[in-house]
Image (cartoon, rainbow, N blue to C red; front, side):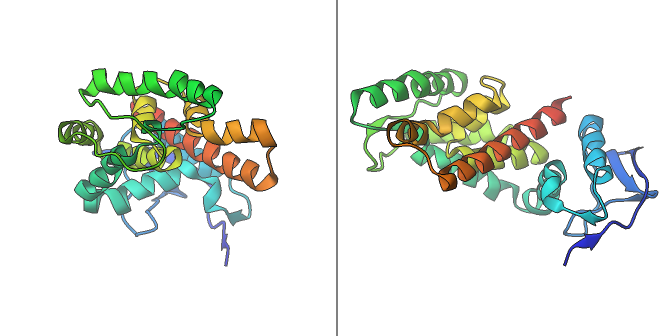
Amino acid sequence: MALKRFYRVCAVESTDGGHAVTLDGRSIKTPGKAALTLPSKSLADVVAEEWDSQGDEIDADSMPMMQLASTAVDRVVPRRDTVIDDIAAYGRTDLLCYRAEHPAALVERQGTIWQPLLDWAALRYDAPLLVTGGVIPVDQPANSMAAVRSAVAESDDFALSGLYSLTVACGSVVLALAVRENEIDPEAAVAASQLDETWQAEQWGSDPEAEARLDRLRTDIHAAARFLALLRA
């Protein structure tokens, strides 16, 4: 059952710990009923805009910044170490490490787009990852995996929420970290994460289901990237 809009005025108020969004003077809470104190005014302003833009009924799916912020409070804070482990684990099977063996044009495209990102991660975090052909898992160096985990752990609880969303959408912790560090922009992350699918569509044509999936992933990647940018603003 949809929740009816129950407020008229949305505002942002400064608090000792950051910024709160208020609805008719009352601070909003997360779905878990926790107080939502936002670390940057830029993020708080956008969350307030999301609430203010609601019509007669509240559509939670139209408020991605609110969702990511709530996830930080309700899900990341109570289990921070587990979330870090979950994100870092993508390094063991990172999309960028698993290459096609043919055709040559696809192999070349993967190398051109993916390898510079792996080289960047190796230099930035001292985390070289092994590349393999096909889909058989390859054991990544323990030191590299530890370095990836350390890189992920640099994020605070709110940034971890955005980083987790990016990692899942991209299928790659390297792509997620590259977006976090402004090494690539969100659309470049979309293109890199969907390289194989784009190649297949070029060869055989696309279909509505695949296009809808791409739209969802693009929306998720851009939202998470915006969330991280607002935290820094």
